[in-house]
Length: 196
Image (cartoon, rainbow, N blue to C red; front, top):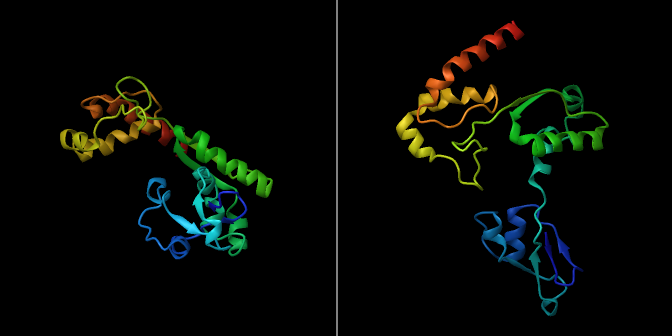
């Protein structure tokens, strides 16, 4: 949203094309640091100055939580299809999505439909950093993906991702697959017993 200094004039940018047309600037990347400098001339005349992007960023989880509706353009299209598919049978994601995606899916569904967004939830654990904390960009406590790929190899890295389903029990090791195999096999055996 671009707004005038006194807050009288507000323009919601619903496309890159609109932002480029109104500002006269070429937009290559929508991240804040690449668009914060772009201004839009006031439609009331040059004496009213320019509109600038608001500081606040609308929570991106709102868009993610809107997925069940947005991907089929409901309620503007596919009403019958949507009503057959909601609530979803299950969603599956990591524990780190609890406050974001799971929550927003449920809040929007209850608010819009008066019903839950999903019937079942499969929530996997996390591979922890060496220090036992969740690997995080903020904490920078994760190994270099390229270094891990070069030293461990793609097959072992892919195989080790199976441990996320067991829970947040493991810390990154030099050779994670050796420690994981027994647990992964046990998990797969339990899964087979439940679903077969």
